[in-house]
Amino acid sequence: PDGTQVKNQQSQFHRLDQKNDVAYFANKPEDVGLQIVPTTPIKGRDWAGGIALQDPDDGTIYMTGSGRDIWWWHDDFNYMPQPADGDHTVIVHAGSLSSPDHHGYSKSGIMFRSSMETNAANYGLYLTGSNGVCPQARLT
Image (cartoon, rainbow, N blue to C red; front, top):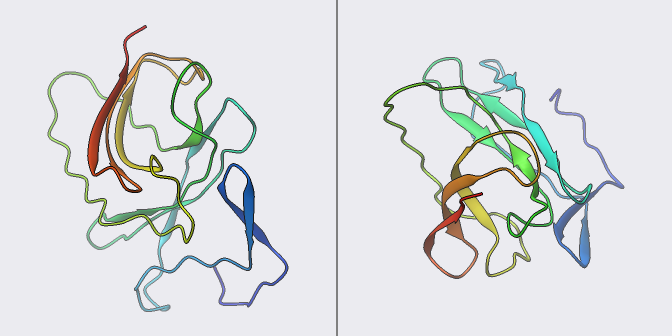
């Protein structure tokens, strides 16, 4: 981002509601810069989107996302895939959900997927809007 103020934009935070002029911030000096990291919207209902930025100094990733849900057979959310084989240690800090009007099961966290299909088998551990930390899985 170049710092230019943008107006008349909307973000989808809830399946029934849009919010005007929403902004996302990462606390980093402008001259340091963050690098854009590719994400993949899993579009089961055509609402998925978002962006990810990475701090080149420490590797921290700041990610936003929107979508309808991660549930049943048509997931719809923003995903940042990274292929992995064998055993790995992953550290995720999902401190809070920043949506001003989130659903009780809004989710932020980590997910392992068998593919990028909307109905892929998956396992996730999420910080939710008002239900604490919850595991969720689709086995087939």
